[in-house]
Image (cartoon, rainbow, N blue to C red):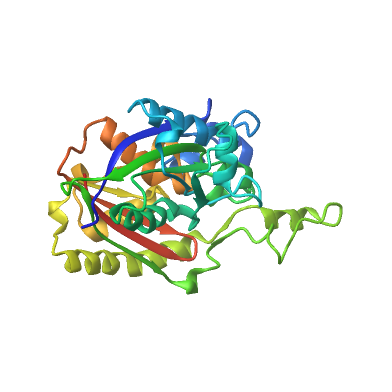
Length: 332
């Protein structure tokens, strides 16, 4: 077991609440379609001026540190685990520290991006450094403005996404709390199932040369049926593999927190696993799919609402573009 513990969490949700009925109008469908199709009743949209990724991240960090009376100077590293970037260069982590006015602080800060499972990837990677004593306190922060990438011509994906930020402070533990096991896998046959093809070196921005259809290259694309099919084929086997390695059964978990990808997708995974309703953490109705924010935000709510306590086992389940799966067993 890697000896790490969650010491505090903080969040920031944009002020604008967007009900399903508003998304119905944006997409151009009859009222009630989005709620019925996605199961998302409301989500938040950032204004992307006063609520940029870095500004929302900074607010989440301030709340997180205030709960434990710490300052940024008490932190050894800041790891941004977002699936999107505020700008191509520099890193999100640098922009967040700039927003926090961390002048000449000289701390370690970098990004880890594996889209929706970025928090799991970041925690899995950096926890070894905490356990080894390289870092004592590390701030993980996920912040997303997914709304800017929505293609309102596509009902399936446009009905899902929301914005927000969450920060999680992780420290070295005394051995009572930790990460018991983790597993990350990628299935590249699903690489085109979820994507934004524009903005990289293959399709860089070229103002004035694009048709309206070309501009859609900079919006999110999803083949929901293909994602659903691949997830149903691999997720149960991947979970079973890690549980067997760690000699833990599903009934031992106090809580199971999946990535809030879609209501139908989560129902499928819950059914495949045979997880009870009491074990299952679902926040998608009031938040939507928040990309990398979904899992740490749900974990934050679980801690705040005392759905988990010290010593409880929690199973984190992620899926992401690529197509990738991530599974982590945490002892709170």
